[in-house]
Image (cartoon, rainbow, N blue to C red; front, side, top):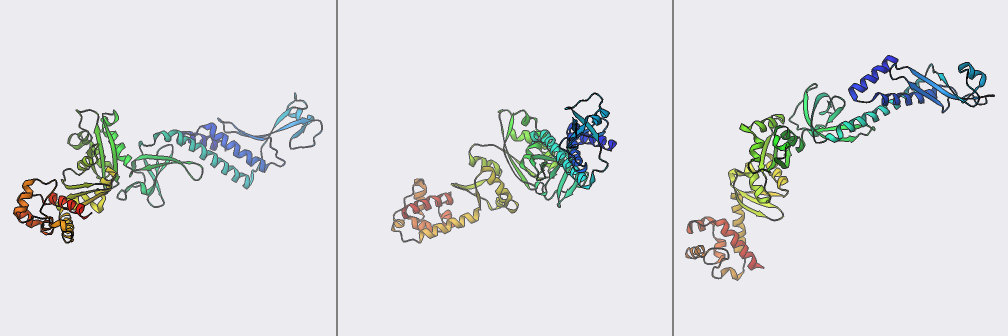
Length: 423
C-alpha cells in the first residue's frame, strides 16, 4: 500500500500537476470516513494521517483521560492512558493509534468515491489555473482516443482536452497518436464537478491564431485582423488593415510568393482563404470582397442587392451559396445576388406592367429628370416621345435606336418617375 501511495503521489504531481499535499488531504478525508464506518464505537474524534514521504498510514482517535470511563468511544481511564503515556494526567486528551484490519466493502467504496471527487476538484483547479487565461491560443496535443463517434480526446500533457466532432471540419481525419493543433476554445465546468478543456479547429479564431504565428506584424500591432468569417472546410474571409502607410496588410499576410498564407492553408487542409483590405464604407468593403468581379448594379437599403455578369454569378454565389453567405456575414448585411440577364428581364417586366396602366400622364410629352437633354432628344427623335412608349418598348429596340444609351440607367429613371406619377 505504501509503495502504491507514493507512486500515486508522484504520478499525480508529475502528470497532472496536482500538489502532493492536495492528494494526501483527499485520501486522508476518504480514509477517515471509511474508518468511522469500520471501527466499532467510532467517534467524531477519529482522524487519519499519511506520511508524505513514506506513505505510512496512521489512524488514531482522541480520548479524554478520566477516573471512571462512562463512554469508551471518547474516554480512557488514567491507568490505561499511563501505559501509553506515563506523564499524562486526568483531563488531558490522548491520541490513541488504531488500525482497522478490514475497512469493509462499504468503507472502501466510500473512500474511492471521496478520493475520486477530491482529486477531480483538484484537477479542475489545476486546469483552471493552467488553461483559463490561455483561451484563444493555439495549442497542440496528441489524439488519445475517440468517443461518441468522431469526438476526440486530445492529450495535452497534464490534462486531456475534448475536440468535439462539430468543432472540426468533416473532411478532416485523424488517427490515435497523431499530433493535432487546435484553438483553446473554452474551459468549462463539467457535469461531474470537474473541468473540461474544449478545443476547436472550425472556429474563425483558429485561422486567426495561425496567422498570428506566421505574421510578426500582427503580433507587434503594425497590422490588424479587423474581422474574420469562416465556413470550416470550405472558405475563410479575413479583413485586414494597416496602421503603417508603408505596409500593405494584404501582402504582409500573404507573404513573399505566398509563403505565409501557404503555411496556414496547409494546416487547414487546403481551405481557401481570402485576405481583403478593410474599408469603413460597407459598399466599398463589399467591392473589395468581390474583387476582381465587377458589380454592374447595386442597390442598398435593408439588404444589398447586386447585379453581376452571368459568367461571374457562380463565383460570387459559391458552392451551395457559401461565398455569398460569408460575404453577408462580413458586411453584416443580407446580400442578394442577381444575374445580369435575370435583372434585365425583371426590369423589362416592371416597365411593361407600368406601361399597361391607364395613367394618362404617361402619354404626356417626354420629360425625364436626371437624364441629359441630349439623350431625351435622341429618344424623341427615335419615336419614344412619351413615358409609355419607352416602357412598352423592348430594351434591344431602344439600344439600337439610341446608340450609346445605358438602358438600365434609363430604366431606373423611368421606373422611379413612373412610380411617382402613380402615387
